[in-house]
Length: 361
Image 1 (cartoon, rainbow, N blue to C red):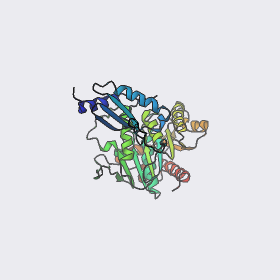
Image 2: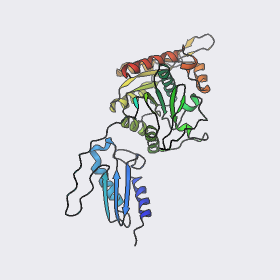
Image 3: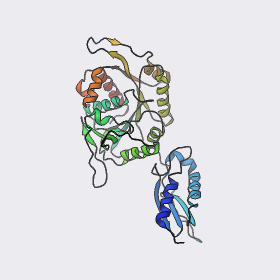
Image 4: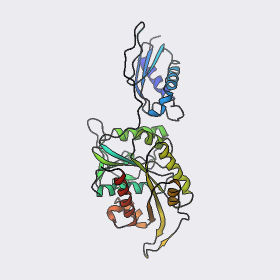
């Protein structure tokens, strides 16, 4: 039977898509680990580019891939290499010498000096509001700033910046050009969606998209890139903080005592990945009446400040629940621009000062 290259390559792609990294639910294809597939006359060579977190399991991955690919009908020989590694020596010859590969650690984004992640243990705490206003506040302070909306399932940056109908340009080099508003260069999957259809993706697909947003967007020279992370501490968040060299993280929460658990998860995520924690922001701390300005404590606790003290991280401030904040977000004008004397703007100024002090440019 003749060797059907097209059929074999399709089968290889399918099997690699079913091969997960050790101790992970993410597969080789979705994570972009498959650098090249060569299939010819029964012989298959697969070149992988594995992340740093599997440094101690590279041999396990190689054997797993070889075993799977060898089951394909017509395949007589399988060779699995890592990108940059020396190929197997021909019979009777010695393999050419190659310098030893160094394990890849977290990488920066070309042209970006500091990357700041804004995280939350759960959704609905105002993480995107903090991300947008922080980015705009840094820009108002004279810095070159970018904002990446990494909340793939619920992208809100386009709405909050009045860019719902915006679409990014693509360069001849197939790079996306960020869309600028309020002095901030922005990118979001929301710019790619033509309707309100939900994004129904598995975690590995989200991770792959975030890698593209970091590596295939023409960010240019930035002092700070603020990343609005998806809520929670799942695969997408962990992969992102393990892959990108973050200057620090900001955790957004609410006052309830139950928020202690969410803050704890966020703190542990950053600590385990050796990301400095810039501080905790407590949102919706009190309700401020728009008429009499009287403040009422809706939630019991004070969870954000308590959690910060408990885990020994800075507490950056409390933001009251004010109706005008939601109105500003809906209208596409961040509060730090529309009401620079507001409590939210003052907290953002404090966070921005903390960031620029710890991450000077």
